[in-house]
Length: 177
Image (cartoon, rainbow, N blue to C red; front, top):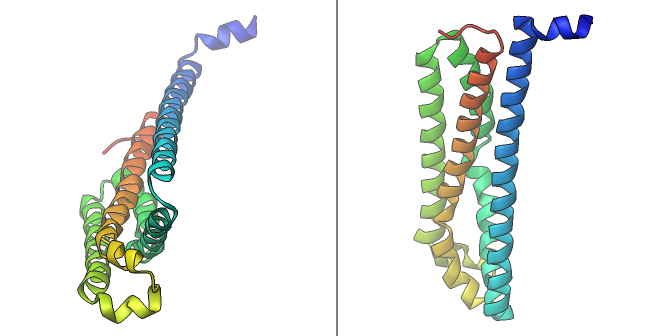
């Protein structure tokens, strides 16, 4: 009998609504992630099927260099965004919030541009350090433009996740400025 009486309370109802919202958001995120992995898997299968061994090896090499350099392009600022943006948003410190976002975007843009300029601008200078394969050396200056794109994607993932967290926190009983 007590359990039935507690369900009618506003606090219990709010907790159930919050739980339902979080489960719905997590399910949507999981579905999107599974769809993304499925599309990526199909693209990889098609590339393996239609490219020769040397061509696929050059593509895989270029993509691995891009993934490695993307870590240096972000400088870990995607983690700073997901850490500080919700705090500044909840406290109403919008100057610090926009400063954090613009600082991270500027640093990512600057380091991405520096990486692209160093690889694409001087291919002969770094070619003896990277590889001796002709196809990979011709493909790398094209794929290197993915470094700032991937870094911006990581930053925006952290930014969107932090705004989702901020709205989740305020719906749990916090006050919105």
